[in-house]
Image 1 (spheres, rainbow, N blue to C red):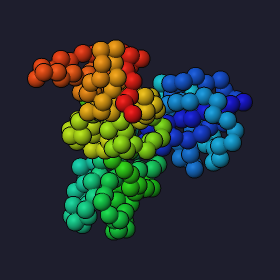
Image 2: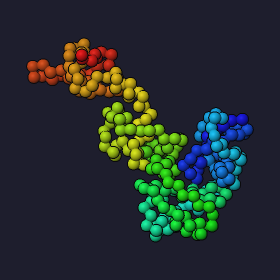
Image 3: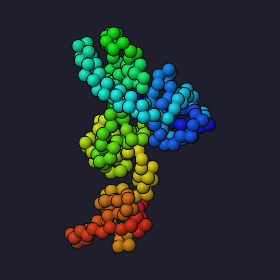
Image 4: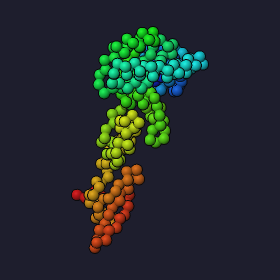
Length: 263
């Protein structure tokens, strides 16, 4: 018996599944979530039985399940412009970014982003009458939208949220400052418009290095005398020091171990 984490395909959620079936990471499975048959991918193994609200494991996805999933994706693409049009007719200030269809096509999840609370009751009534299935409206964040849609990050790799992240850690502008990054939004924001999730990955390292490294423009002692710090390289653990004597400036690079902070 094990409890695994499964990231669903039709919505930006992970569920925890208790099963006797031996599963591996990246296995495609079918689970029952509140009476809805959903498909997803195993993200984490052996998460522990302390998790509540466990979903029911049904089976490893079959060829027929995967075919149904592809058909549902095509169906969702056809639904998207129709639902957008109905929302526009009602002048709802919302961005509908992703339509999820569960495996047995009994539920449609409309995921949207908005800057304010939206009264979608009239839209829900119209969609229920039009499609004759259960419709669920879900307001999600910009990060969740990118997680579901996917894309390539500034590093050229698939967005972390779409590839493997289950939850979003808090990311702050202080993390970018710790890494001496340009605070230009085009450099430190992801495709979701929020701060890059990867700023969090090495923040502990940069926090530690900030304590060890001398501050820019501070005076330090070196084997060649006292100078002023003009640059620091956290990764190489090197400090660039400028010396000025008789109107002549000389710049040298030292390993951190050869530099002592001034008092």
